[in-house]
Image (cartoon, rainbow, N blue to C red; front, side, top):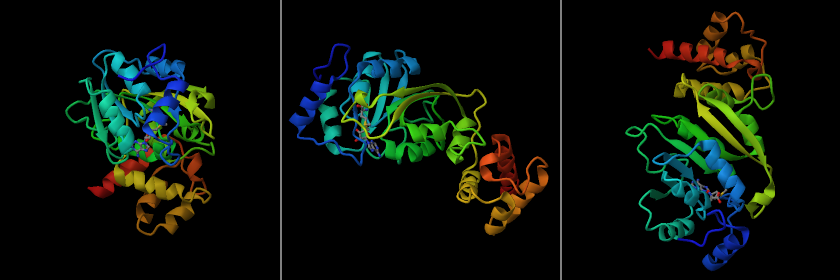
Length: 287
Ligand code: SAM
């Protein structure tokens, strides 16, 4: 095992030393800003309420500081890391720990690593996400056969604001709708750049989301349609319908059947229940 800091996590100097020993320069494109603050690691585990025997998916374990803390709590960790050098390092460091299942792959294509979510539907996600994949990864995980019962995620502030935005706000987007209908927000904490090595140039937040008892999943076709509608977010719904010939019939039926929906409204003002009504219209058309 790696030489850990006071509370079991990697300190800034240990992180620098390991990177030096590995001759590894943090890769900016892969969002390699490693956590070096044990309080944030502890806070993540606390928010996720990690208990012995929990199945936890971790995206981008990096040098394993969060991974080590999850394993110490007795969780079974399914981690997916794209960087072959870090994967190799982690495989050696944690070779004796049977509770770690490590996959060297792209988390967008393998959003829950090696965890078979069909067989094990009760799982959590705890991750300091590489910021460039947060939306596609989230989309992929929400499209899975079973979705996590909670997600505790370190995110770029802008992405986090989009994820939890409500109708009427400029941040309201398709992912706010898909996520908001399936999860409720439990916590939203700003995290200082000094908690990472190297320091990121953007602001970070730690967000905790809990699956709603009646979590709603949109059909893939509705999701694609909502995305097309939002790609014209400055336009009015009536003219958007006319500009999408393949979807015009569905959109006009949706507009006609929902009196609270004005053809002059813009996508960002439409509340989630009306997007759900669009899902019902799409469903009828698929039958
Ligand atoms: N969990 C570590 C920590 O908290 O210190 C590292 C977090 S760092 C922000 C993001 C990690 O995600 C890096 O290890 C990076 O190599 C990995 N990563 C980047 N893109 C990825 C992808 N598409 N799939 C899987 N891992 C990825």
